[in-house]
Length: 303
Ligand code: PMP
Image 1 (cartoon, rainbow, N blue to C red):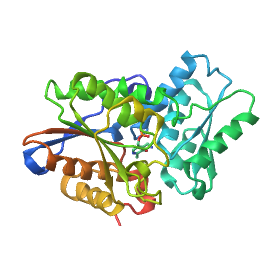
Image 2 (cartoon, helix red, strand yellow):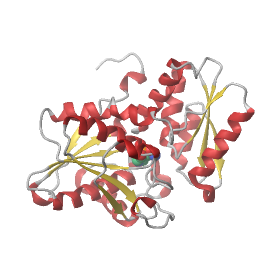
Image 3 (cartoon, helix red, strand yellow):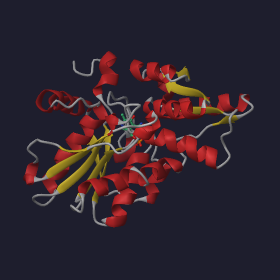
């Protein structure tokens, strides 16, 4: 494959039929999003936020992009910004992985850390405050910007449908951070397959099951409030996966399958296996593996 720039490599990731025994002789298909050039599912979002911002006249040559992020969106935005030589400031709660923050800086972004106890709400508040002080600033804000689910509705969803080449999609299982991936992809799938059983995955400590919020090690998923995008699609179930279960699957995927996945992918795999138990025999379950374990080595992901 000959390409002219790395931006052309965003999307069109492989869909892996996971070679493990699944309850009820079902099949789990995982979209391997670590094969995007910035290493995660969020390259799709970064490119959409920048290109849509330019198309809407919100981003000019002189604009500084400011975004609150747990990391992968920051990398995606910084990567897309290099295409237009735009300045980026990324606001990240301090504890998020060293590797992600190093990659954002390598891509030319300025990284500002906020206290962990202020969580993503604190990072968002800080991003908006910084934007007020800069004359020509744009905060895409992935948490409220409907370009976020649209990015997945128009890329990841159609890719999955095409990858499966007419096979029915009985269930779609995806982690929720902003909810953009889950909602956008589910919208695309439900538009061709109305009854696809749709499952949101969260770590324990996230509030979608009406339990109190609390800390978790699983990185990239988990919400502090119900994402505004959720009203746009039917979600049939929430699966809460404890950290130890997600990390257990991260280790098994590496040892048994040669598959290097991050903890949100471990949670997605655990949830998919649980969903298989309640679906009819031979069901097709589609899930998303957002990134790779390599960006969590400093956090001892395999220990
Ligand atoms: N997994 C990882 C590793 C992520 O970085 C993210 C994005 N925060 C997600 C899952 C969840 O994606 P979304 O924000 O679209 O819900």
